[in-house]
Image 1: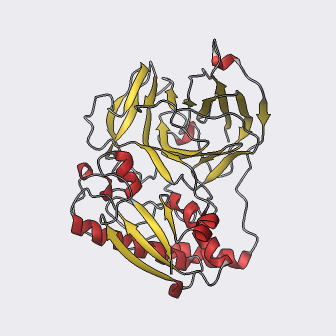
Image 2: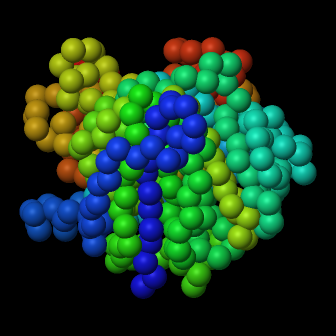
Image 3: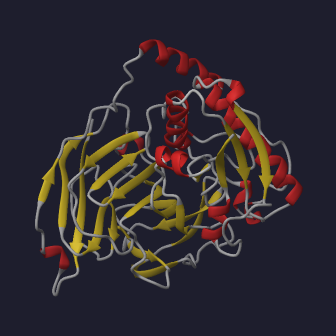
Length: 409
């Protein structure tokens, strides 16, 4: 098993090189595996249910063109692709202990389906190196070629757009290490050099400087991110809530601290040129859902973390973080009942979107039932594009409109 070096730096707005101002270093070993459930009987029941849920109902028709927007893709996706990589496709079972839940308001969503291949993607500002749009695994993705690498940032009017609580997600792969040689900078580029098997280094720009160093650690068993498993897509998810920070690669939580300081301003990706690298599905979201709080203060829970395959009602494995929280809430309060509402943006055919939203709501109910929730406590309704909560003129607005809501009954 190859080792991994990961660095998370909170860089200060200081005169001179911000990367030279480090106030504090933290070290923590990565857990060899995520915490296991203690109730073995419940584990077996859930395993059987998840196994059955690997092949839910699909939509079976409609406009599947990538240029039709992301109603025909998984919510929050660039369009196309199944999210699996190489020879080890993720499953609902493999993500069964996942606890990452994305923020509740999307402030940046990459949308590459309509971009011209060979050109710099229009949603990003390239400050150094070379990048372009290429087709990889049947979809448009960001490509950084071998050689100069690339430093780029989402094109935003206001460059201090990050709140105190936020999440960042993206998929990444390259020719040598699977996940490697990528530096994600939140505000100010900080040069980072490391050894083989480097995960994304993540830098925050704010009022203080914090160096979060995992050091030379071993991946959890089963997470193959090395030269023997190159060119496999890996899902990276980052959650920051003031002093608390977590980093996930695929279904594994590889970092968890609770004493961060400072505040992020923006996001920059720094990809070196050791080999060809590919990135897709970049999503930045403000806030984070506290499902237990929302259900006691509001009549419904709005989620953006339940994702589906292209033009299908097949739930993507990354959805298990949100689904686990909903299932836990229902188990803690046996009197609670929900209507599961499926919602889309307004791209594509309205009738098709309405039918697809119903099928997806039904798939969510079926999955929760396999996780031990009584069928009678859940009803479903597809709303299509009839109840937008944001505009349908930007990728972020459309991403906010694509959602699953749980309304108390």
